Image 1: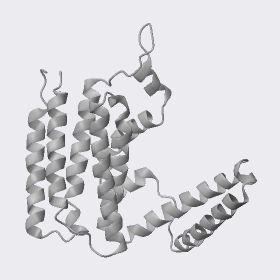
Image 2 (image 1 turned 180 degrees about the vertical axis):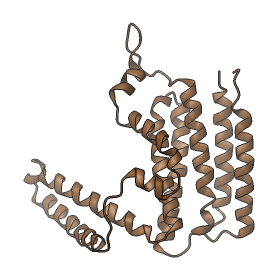
Image 3 (image 1 turned 120 degrees about the vertical axis):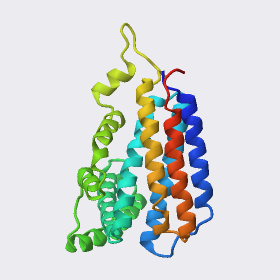
Length: 246
């Protein structure tokens, strides 16, 4: 069987070493740099959440975190490749806000609350011109497949779709998670092969994301080499703990 405990222990050490480096840097002063930094920080937090779910006995739900890590990684890579991609992110945000505020305002309970209606209308009015402006520049809905393709990580798209099935509670996943031979399972662990796959992908996303930090922080080339070496060492160390025989 895979050595899950050794893998999670090594995963914690990898994150700690990468965190130590990032704490020495400061984010560069521009909107796209700050957005890139927030994307990395969220990826790192989702990595930690993945470990907590696995160690806390909820490994069958950790795939939702890794799915979000993949999405964030695609956006991060697109942003550091082209700073104008921040406008795609702004468009996505405005479009989502408009849908949310419109549907929320249409809720029967909200319609009885004039103050809430005014606030929702105010928020929608702030998002509307952003969406209109960016649509005028050619921005529109960009699906996940195109984001992954644009970021040159299309090879991870299949894994992303598999993790989506866990996040969206598809019937196949529900049965795999809970259906036993004679009774339903509750608080059951995911198959160890799946846990190994989740940890492997999560670690690689984290390492591949952190090496982008020189594009949006003041970390020096020497410090960047440090993290690149750490990532290479992490890959080597990571491979060592993926053993069978626990």
